[in-house]
Image (spheres, rainbow, N blue to C red):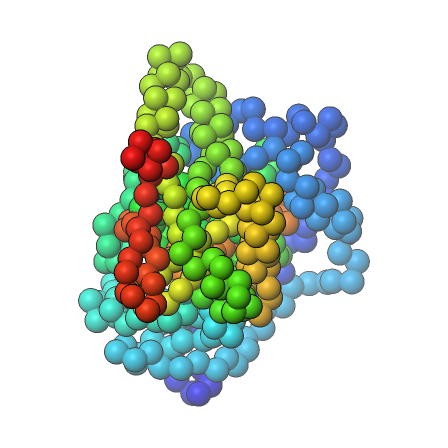
Length: 390
Ligand SMILES: O=C(O)CCC(=O)C(=O)O
Ligand SMILES: [Fe+2]
């Protein structure tokens, strides 16, 4: 069905308003490092560490010679009525992953709409809504319909709402979510889902988020490799992406005393290091998902270091497969709601030095497990320390 045949909110795409103007790179580059963190900045890294952001900036042309005045186009889009909420229209992005749902109002979602959206999320792994010009509280309230919310233990919070993680980047703070990951895999119970809302986006383009279907990533492996990794476990930690160091630096720069920094270190040290299954059984769909990535996974338990590295590299590369992916272009007010148990995501860092401001609310999850398909036996994640003491 064509969108033009039914009554749906506007599907206008934003035209080019301003063009990217490359600016000279600072000299030395290290001057851009994250030395002056401010409250509310997270997931940031100095430009010198983010070679992709730097490469895009250096490659961009000084002026957009071939493009003139911006013109907004409307286009026809094929959509499908959502079962259980047929006034909501679904536009698919990737083959197996990612759908935009038209007609959602996050400020006034009924329980039956929420149920239908949850069923779609389980099928499509990530769903998107556009033009949600809602308050922070409405963002939180909508998210709460899908489960209890998670408060991040050490990231700087939104000034008024502990449930919101601000992910702000700009000239000083280079976007650093450009690594495939599933959120907070360094926790024993990583989050079920994340709801990310765009408040400021780069123009005319940049800062898209990519999603990879980790069921497809698993299904795409050769049979003998699947057999080899079924039932394996791997150590995961935030240390792999420097999250502790970033949080500690921010705290120090906000004037924390030695005592407060000591308390932070003790609190961080008390976070158990999780050992998660390499292949995770989804608790709601029963499907198998590949559950490792470069951001968090350190090594496979019980395997020689070199063998573990080699195997993990093969598994990490699965997320790079375009067939398993979708890509979402943000507009102000766009929201992505993804299932961390079924997909991974990657925030493209191709807009430096422009500003991009995103806010995330996270739905708490439960302990991952691997279920043997024949015996139905479940093996749950465990804390590295528990096993060491046993
Ligand atoms: O910056 C992005 O697009 C992704 C942010 C992210 O990784 C997150 O919110 O968990
Ligand atoms: Fe993330």
